[in-house]
Image (tube, rainbow, N blue to C red; front, side):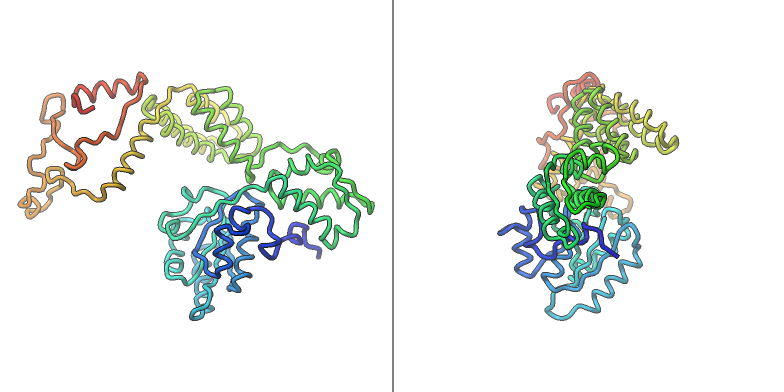
Length: 422
């Protein structure tokens, strides 16, 4: 059985590896660690077809380490534990730790990711995860803190041309034909920075030509693909570009642009729930207190989409998209939690003032827990002046209301209560 061209062209060493020079080029950070022979656990984040699996295999071969691989799509906690047990039994004193490669690690549930923690922390395995999704959102914090994250980029035109030329001059099947790259715009465009897709298209075009002389032209590529594919690939870099354009159009209050990019995502087969999640985030992050109803509508959109399904669900997405794009914008809540997080990081675990503490036991009451706390509802307008921050932070401002009609009402109310503090 003849293996696909993409498999035949899979590089076996760093010198054969194309792309990602910022990581594995001469003197780059990951190459230095590989050459030193000691690696931390790490996660490779990038679009499909940029060499994540290949890089993991090269690392294992270079370090002469036992290599185990799991797919998050088909593996469960039991499979993870079995792989760790095998790795532990093959681990020898002062030897390189076995490598466990998990493809699509973002698809692992929390319990599956939890099952990796002990082995990663004790060095029983070196974990290499591969993901097309942002690990900050998809990988649990304890595991993420134990791993380096390396970002892989889509291959650029020079990388793709290098791969094309290498394929037609070194592959044992392709070299039996005379292949001329007369035009490359179409094949590069349709590959979308994906090496695997590029080689698949090349193999399709060459395989459809019975002649020993094959001329690659833009027209021939389009004909062999049988249709003009939409310039959208939910697994490739264009996925990230279009969702970025969608988000920025809503944030920029341009309903026409927002609905256009929504249509592009729908035409490209994007997961409707992925779009709905982005709308929820937009409602909280970019519209916020300027129109609190936006978050309610975005949440209703997500629920309704699950009830209605597809294709009618696109109407729900469209309505929500236009409403959010046409809403006034405020990121005061986003800035407030960022400021608060920074304050916490700088000041550490400041003690809770005694009057704000709960006092469920006699001892706590004797220690003045809850003493002098004023219950707001016992006072006029349900408000009374008292301090709610640690003494060290009493002059610190965190939330700053922004200039929009809805938020200005909140600002005016708070100023009436607190006077000069706000």
